[in-house]
Length: 280
Ligand code: ATR
Image (cartoon, rainbow, N blue to C red; front, side, top):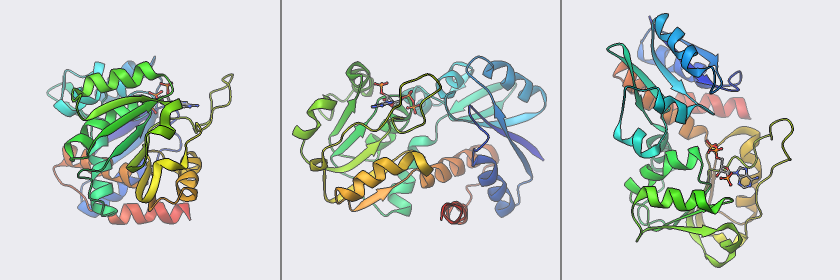
């Protein structure tokens, strides 16, 4: 039996233990998968303790993905490009980091939802960890021009610089959204609709003009559950053709992680359907 965990904070409601238990049953891989609460301050020692107890692979979620990269002896090219790690593999007494979020999103959009991403004029809202994680994979999937818009414009500029394709990747101000015209793909990678931390001002989705959306636009929120509701409601009201939450991406990134750990990629339709049923 191999020993796995997901690290994050908060972590109690993580769906990863259920997804991986299902993948294990389906593929006949014996595994134990637990959820471990860790903050950026406690993560390094929690991960050491997990390794000492025989842990051989871990998923990493908010707010630890950048910290995870720093704890790796070695990291994949896509993890370095994202500046973040969501999958840790124990290798010769060290952690090797990878990032399956971007490919997970692309597989969900192209496979499950049947979208052809090639040449899609794309708007990415946000320039934090989640946006860094998915932007390289979207570019690799052949999207058209990519516009990155963030409340703090310097972070959008920094992400554009990092992606290194000045002819195809542009930053714009949030206030100028109405001038950008229509997009084929609009992705919400902000945490604006997440519950504000105690003591913080109430946050909320910035005002988005409906002119961003046309009859064939796909709108995607990288989160799921209640957090995804405001953006997806806006997308439907604006007339989007697709309004897609992050459940499929969650399942697909987990399947990619499972393959890194166990060498088999599980089928994801069952896990996806089970999570949808739970939603309904
Ligand atoms: P994550 O890992 O989820 O991306 P993050 O790195 O903290 O978390 O990034 C959060 C993103 O949501 C950032 O792009 C942030 O904008 P800033 O860079 O200006 O902070 C964005 N965000 C959070 N709350 C927001 C709000 N109320 N309105 C607009 N953008 C918001």
